[in-house]
Length: 322
Length: 284
Image 1 (tube, chains in turn blue, yellow):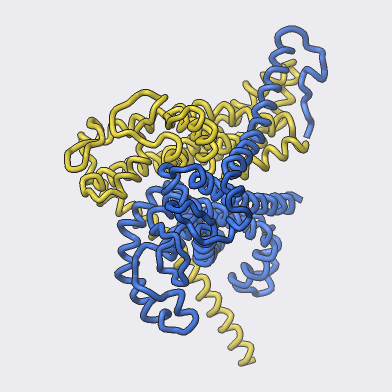
Image 2 (cartoon, one colour):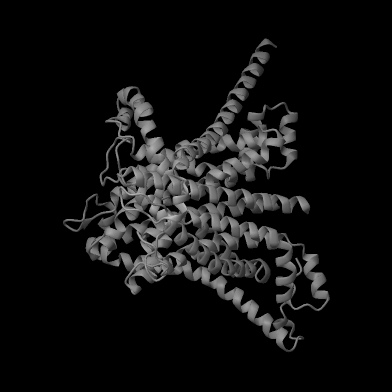
């Protein structure tokens, strides 16, 4: 595109306009750098805040499973495990669901319903985390406890090896419940990106495949998906990043128990729920610093996941543009 | 021939099964939206009474409302939006108008997009260390700062998207009249992109009005009426969270009432923003 130069480069303008132009450009640049500064500030503040914990416990902080405020011994293994496990469940359940929604909206839906349906699914993304939390605690968890978990325990729970994941009493709250709620929460994010990238497929490709006699599913699986795979993976990772950082919904339903159990139905904790629960009550420098160290770990993991997601989506955009 | 026909039938059957499953997936998504709204309405409507808007958060066992929390949330959301929006617009302007394609602009856009999805609880931790520790106490200002930081990426993102859609011919026409660049941006580009930018601001307000986690570390909450932004101030999300986790039925009922209030506000903002956006695109 043609770039219209600012007056500071043409230097034809005199007087106040010249000044305004410089000021305006300066202000936009200043706040542009301010964004970078915020991210840098977040990183620095977390590193400084967690220094005490890493000094006390060393790198073994990452792999220790004790969390004992009474003796001031802390390790991050249990919250890390909880974060990864709940996100994994969210992905296992959420990806097929989101894919189904995206396929339905792009391939099957009557054009008249397309917009209302997209908006309805996206409204799920608008509902704040805390609402999912109280709904999960008062409605969803009791439902799972009474109807779903006993069933799982009596069926899959009896199978050797895999059964260990579904053993134990039905608490209602726990890692499984948190993972399922996260699956519902990431659904709108993943499906709206999948829908957007599915729509970038040139009609020519679709039509050629249909012309060869492919069924709708074959077109989606063999033509649309291979063409959009970078974007689809990017969307999934964006959802993963969201799931790992989600706080209130998880805090309400995970049960906040600092231990690792093989059963998915047992209570656990995640990095974000540990922070939300304990931070304001943490007394003692080591305790608080350990919590900030958890925050740093979460920041690093989500930053990597989100940056990778963004990178893939940018690649997808270029591909669609060219 | 018969074999081919059998294969064709099988392919068709597979197609229908999978498309049926995709219909189910959409149904499941809509079902959960419905289930959440239904629970909010059945539990929350019982708590919507005039006293909800006129009385303070009560002690357990006595009657009360959420007036102080509603006020606190409104003020912090307002301050957060008023501070965050201009910053977001300026950042978006820099990326879209002054640095198209250059490295700095690209990195700002990239970092902004990461911030857009970054966990809000991390922002809360940052503001805690930045403001709460030096000041020595939780405060409404710290909460507003957190919310402002959360507003910026949303507004920046939509500003960039909208300014890029403004046809270049408009800029060139204005430049040909001798208009200085800042005036082109403000009077031509902003005006052309107004609708989209407004949508972005509304979505940002919707996002921060339900934000809870970062407020836990920055504002805490307050049982009483307080307008002092320098002190902990009551706010809806944290009150909902505390009351919902409490064992008292009347607190839990108020939590449902507050939850209904927040959700209705946010869904209204969301729908309004989307209608506005589609209205704008239909006109073009």
